[in-house]
Length: 418
Image 1 (cartoon, rainbow, N blue to C red):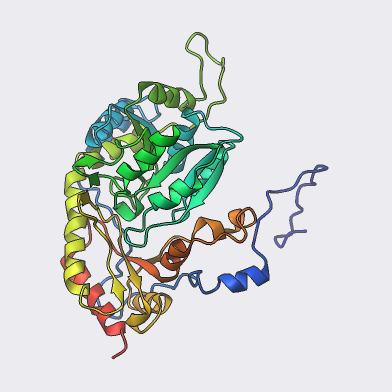
Image 2: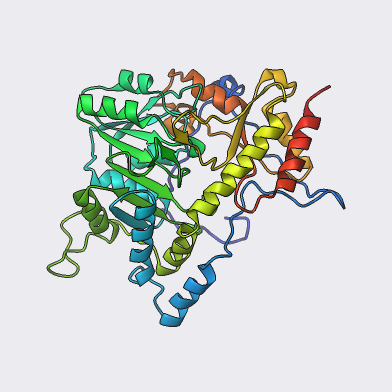
C-alpha cells in the first residue's frame, strides 16, 4: 500500500522498474575526497545586497517572439514547419558545415550521429574521462563500449597521448569534447584517427562559435553535435544539432531521426529509427538565437576578460585556459580552487550561495559514476579526478553585467582567509 492509500498495480512475473546502480559504502568512502559536496542552497541577498545571480541566463530579446508568432499564426508547430530547415541551414553555415540535422536534444544528437556512423555491439569508442555523462551514454545506446582517456592538466580537454595509448583492435572512433567552450587539440587527434583508420567526432555541446586556428568547431571532425539546452550559447530550451560535411552521414541521420520511414511507402521501416525530431517552435527560437551568435560569443568573452582582470592576482586560483591559436567561447567561466586559496572549493561555493551567487562544481569523472564504476573499477584518471575535486564555474551568459562580475569577484576575494 502506498502512502496515499492507493494500491500499486500488480507486477507481472519477471517485471520490475529499472534498478538503480550505486557504488558500495567502502568505495564511496574512498571517493569522498574527489566527489563534490551536495549542492548549496542559494539564499537571496539581504535588502540592498543585489539580486540573485544565477549560473546562466539567456536573452530572448531578438526575433524569438516574432518567429514564434509566425509559427502560431501559420498553425505550423510540428517538425514539418519551415523553421526547422531554416535553422538547420543557418546553424550549419555558422559552424562552417554543409549539413545540419536538427533534433530534440543534444543527447539525441549524439546518439543519432553515432548511429549514423554505424556503431554497434563489439565496437569501442575513446571518450574523455572528464565530460558530462551524456557523451559516454550515447556510445552505450548504440551497443558500443566507451573507453576512457584522461584530460590534459593545462586545457582540461582530452589528452591526445592518453587517447593514443587506448587505441585497440576494437576501437572505431574518438570523441573529442570542447570542454566548457575551449577547443580540443583536433589536429593531434586527427593524426591519431588517420593513423588507425578511426572516425573523429566532436561533442561541441558547450562550444558554439569556438574556433581552432580560425576554423569553427563543429566542422573539424567527421561529424559533430551541439546542444541547445537553456544554458547553452544558442538555446531553444531543448534541442540539438548534428553537423557534418559528409552528405551520406547527414542523409542517414535525417532518415533515422524520423522513425526511418521508407520513401517508397508509408509505415515501412528498413532501419531501426528514432523519434528525435525538433518542433517548428523550437527551431524558430533557435534560428533567432543563431542570428545573434557572434554577439552572444562576444558577451561571454567580454565577461571572461572582466573576470580575468579581477581574479588573476588572487592566490590559489587557476583561471580557465585559452591555448594559442584557439578561440575559447567561455561557455561558463570555469576555475580551479587550489589548496593555496585557503578554503576548499566546496566551502567557497557555500559562501557564495549564502550571498545569492549560484555556482556549479565540475563534472564527476565517468569512471567513478555509479553506472560505470563496476566496469571501470580500479581505473584512475588523476587529472580528471583533480579537476572534479577543485573545479567550479561561475555565472556566465549574455545577461551577466559588469556589476554582477564585480560583486562575484569581490565575494571570492573576501572568502579567502587573511
